[in-house]
Length: 276
Length: 339
Picture 1 (cartoon, rainbow over the protein chains, first blue to last red):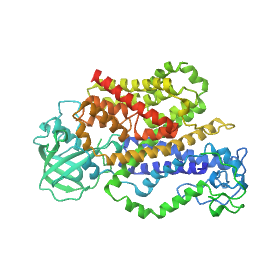
Picture 2: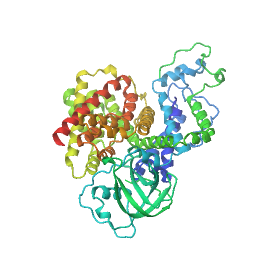
Picture 3: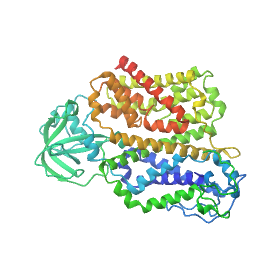
Picture 4: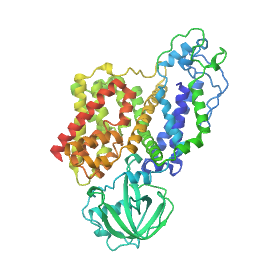
């Protein structure tokens, strides 16, 4: 791998980082607070790449011949560097022709040409620009068990005012399991999440909780009972209902809180798909 | 990459036909890159059909998430590493650290507390330290302690385990202890020939900022590819390994410590997030969850890939198992004492 290729890879990767931060795409992968760091990292890579392309095409280094060549096609994502695209790009040793002075030139770079594995840097670039994988959904939610960490305080503040009162799924589950549902009793609650099919029929309203990135995902699932319409997995729904105890049929370590639904209707997916 | 042989006047057998003519330039990797980009763009419809299955989509999301999340830390790491290589005089570390490796190891381990990054930044920084003449055992102690005991990680741990300051203390002691013990073991038994001979870029005759730019790009390209390898593996294990096997081992204390240590290796969660995952593994003892937090920042599949790219395979097959064993022992000790 020659220096131009290294620089172009950096440019593509930095561009990919900037691309996902340009809208809400990055929220599918990481938490919102990482945005400034991602923007900074992307910018550093783009600047480093452009600077490198510019320097290495305008500043001759000793012992290197300069030759003009036809400008090769550049990927559309990067601006073409300086006008004289000289072949400072070292020749791949395996493909080098002795005539071109390749032996001498590539020798001077052979020790710091990028390793083959660096080609893999293209994978995240392709994944972001071409596939743009969606946020984790029912597949991940169905795989993980519902484990809710014990909260700091053993005293639970009453739910805020409102009828129905909107809470996060994590809050609902924490109150259900660690407060035995006492602070939920007698209130109508509104939950927003996606549909995960429940084994044996019915559905969970579910949400994925992440701290840094989708690799540390933990699902929260709440069983919906009552008159539930049949909805496809991953449909975003709003459930309004009352506390319905917990279902511990899946074992004590994986208690599932229940909501008795008064109404279930589909809604638009939120811009931030995860809870924290 | 190896230095090319002086080729005979005939074009080498493997040279493709386009470069036969002596007048035309040889095929460079930039041409290959361009060709790959064009091909992938053309094959795009096919690609999105492959990414249709739920498991593949989940894998792709986790893979991109690991890469995206590691990127700022890797950039920070190579920035610091290049800065160490270019702007810090070599004599500085010789003066700052004790002469004998046995004494330098704990100093370097405690110095790890000042790098507020995760494991992805500490690998290039440790390499930069070694290139600047820091003894390998001390640089390795820094490598292990920095992602585990820096203030950001300790604060995250105290938030994840509210009202349990002893968990934070146990994590700090077990992680620092692991770093120092591994450093000492390395000082006693480590051999320099286990490190792959990876010379840095040729920086002779260039200005400081030019040298900074060249080392930064060099370090990033070298580490980046291996980070992607780690991301591929971690995402695959994340999707493939069923969590239900964890429930099976939860009952036995010894088994659960080992199981959560292994889970930390497999999941490759950033050290700033692992405390929250540990907190949610409520079916396990605190000691087992401590093992998860002590092993994670020091040995995981992403880190092993990054280390083998930076220090070589012969290094990593010795270093990673050693670290794992010491980290498990450290967690058992600290957990038994404090938790």
